[in-house]
Length: 566
Picture 1 (cartoon, rainbow, N blue to C red):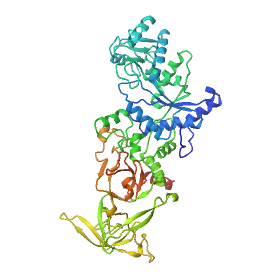
Picture 2 (cartoon, helix red, strand yellow):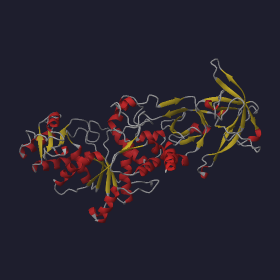
Picture 3 (cartoon, rainbow, N blue to C red):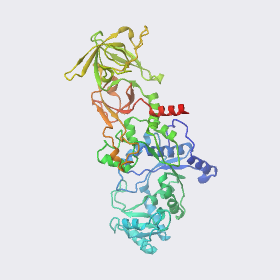
């Protein structure tokens, strides 16, 4: 369960209404047990964060239990790396599981139940290939055809099933199928496969098992063994619920959980398919599962997102019965609200231009005072070194200022944040005609960035003192995809991959405090946005900072417009 509370009270939803009724009726003795059951075949993404928030949050609010259970029934795709990353992500989001379980620990019990189904005449060994099973399954408008092996005796089925376990047959040669109804309008009930032969190294079981359960058979049994009361799934499992119930109803003396479905999280400008995410990792289209452009929880973490912002986002979108797509801007809005309150302010210049104050004493360094976070009085203040030579943003100077350009230009005076007023004097260029340095004069009476004479100076620039400037690398990120729904137009999500989703600036400089910023320390770079020290930064190496989000909040502006229209 959660060690930390969500940033707002849990919203009411239909799942909580069901639980409230069950508790009032003393169903399950009033107990509430949920579980988060990922398959360890990839890293968790933001959609999983919603499921984590839902399952762990319900257990917390009803003083119940929530288990973390790995559905490790397909060793061909599962790795220990994924298990480790999932545990880390759940902890990072602020949750602690009541029990840590693995489906593979239940394999022996599942096998015993499978023999029980055979003895009851409810399961049979089939010799059809996977392709033949699919072909005979039928369609939504046509019933399926029964397998010619459906009529095998209980004795023959038990013998063959035990020989399947013993390794007598090659992979895929035989399967165990449930005997239900090949004419059922629900295709999931048309004799689904329960077990297949598969020789693969299992992360926990090694080569002990050659026979692996299918998800539909294993899922309900896992829930039953753990005493889950409310098995909460996404909507794609709604058609599987009759099968989930059928298996449990036909086993003797087992606990029967209740499966409830909710709408999964779809987010604009992202893909949530593990298959697609894995494809991008394997083809080196991203820098790994935790690439800051990826919608994985580890990717959001590396980009500088906070668990508080993600939990707040989940609170706001709530739980629905109908699938929809949530605007990415809402997630960024939740993030900015939290970072604005918690991030220390620093100055960093991403594209440096040298500025020299000709009338400032050479060799002098004075220390100016600045608030660490004006939103948090308890954050204190810091001292900034100020000198004759500084860096400002290249965009903060132009020889030909357009209309409403309020920064430095010939004949202009600007304010240096926390520093002084400076006035343009002259500039130097290189052979290509590019400005290489700007010379100014300063007003000593304007220390702190203000004067008593009422001068109206509109422009303010941030800066970094050249002698103490810390060289840094800055990574600027955009959405990984150019389309809100990648692949919708062309059918291939990779067609919408943005080749310019990452910009790397190697000449950036920052305040001295950035030199030893611990990995994952978050900042607001004044006028630039929110940044985080990359988690792979190492002492002695040039620090890297990833831009988490810009300062502009498109979601807040959208809400303001909607409010004005109302």
